[in-house]
Length: 188
Length: 135
Image (cartoon, rainbow over all chains, first blue to last red; front, side, top):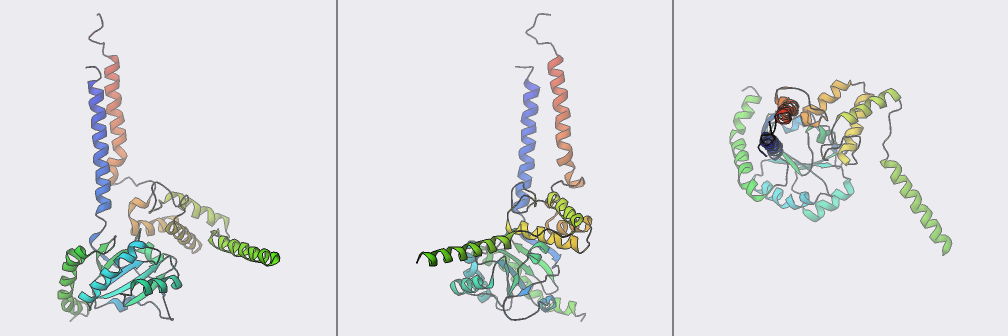
C-alpha cells in the first residue's frame, strides 16, 4: 500500500487540477454578461416594416439598448414586461429590437400578444449582426453609449433586480454623462 | 371525394418537398472554394452546442455561420481573414484547436507535465523492491 501512496497522491492532485481548470471555465462562462467597453461593430440590419435603411450614425448622441429577440423564444416573451418597465423608467433611452432567425408575420403576432416596448424594430435574417456581436443565444441586450461604445451586455432575460440594480445604476450614470459625451463627440 | 383527398395529399407533399429543399444548404459552385469552406467548418466550434464543430451542428446559428463562411470564401476572403472575423466576435474559444499562447500554456502543457510526473512516479514505484519481500 505504501508503494502506491505516491501514485494515489498524484492521481488526487491531477483530479484537483482538473476540477480547478473546469471551475475556471465555468466562471468565465458566467461572467460573459457585464460591463464591457468596445466599439459597436457595423451592423447591417434589414427593415422590419417599410423600406428604411439602417443608419448606425443615428445612434449617436443618445443611449441605446439593442435587444436581440425572436417570437419563438420563451424567455424573450417573459422579459417584454421588463423592457416596457425600463422604457417607462428611462424614456430618453432608445430601445431597438433586433429580430433574429424569425419571420415578420410571427413577430407581428408576438408583439400583439406581449406588447411592443421598442422604439424601432429591425431584422437580422442571416444572423450577420448576431455573429458580428458574438451573440450565442437570445435574449441578449447590449447598452451602447452616445459615442458608439458598448458599455454593458446582458446574455440573459432582463429582470426587475437587474433593472433596479447594476443596469439601472449604469443607465443613470450614462444619462448624467450624456451632455459631456455629446460635447466631446462634437469637439465642443 | 377520393380524388379530392389524393389531390390534397399531393399538394401537401409538394409543399413539404419545397420546404425541405429550402433548408438544404447550397454548396459553392467552385469545388475548391467549397473545400476551403468545409475546412473552416471543421476548424470552428458550434457556439451553442457541446463539443460539436460547425460541420456537425444542426443549430440555426451554426447554419447561418456556415452560410456566412461560404459567402466570405466566395468574396475571396482568406482562411486567416475568416478565422479572424469569428475570433474577434467570439474569442479564441470558437476555435476547435486553441492556439498556443500565454493564456493557453497551462491547457497545452498540463497534460504533458502530468504525464511526465505520473511516468516518473510509476517508474520509481515499479523498480523499488517491496518492503514485504525477502532480500
